[in-house]
Image 1: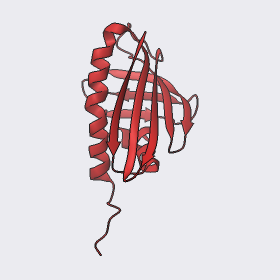
Image 2: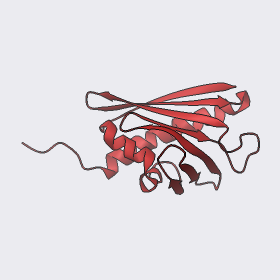
Image 3: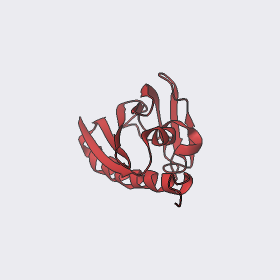
Image 4: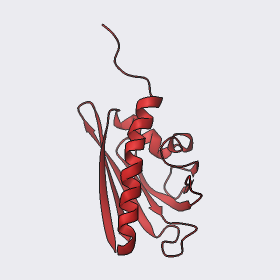
Length: 141
């Protein structure tokens, strides 16, 4: 089994980024067409991608504005069944925003390229969604 790591800098505070990782209506703004998220340990993680693929797992650890952890797998792909891999998203506060560090663990070796490509596509969409959806903190002097 292998893991991937993808990073993205986002011009928003960790508390704001955290909401986009734990609230269904915010998740759909950057990765899926539908989401059912019950962000508590043991709560459901269920999303439907734009291509109809469905990922399912459960939240395993949540630390407000610092970490979101959940299991992951595809309902439609028996080679990675629901809950068989783990996604850990750390939010590291930086001047001017947040460094998002996503680690996806326990992937079969032949699934690494497609999952790296997927997360590398979607994390910039997260940054863009936050930029478009959240009001700017700056105001004219």
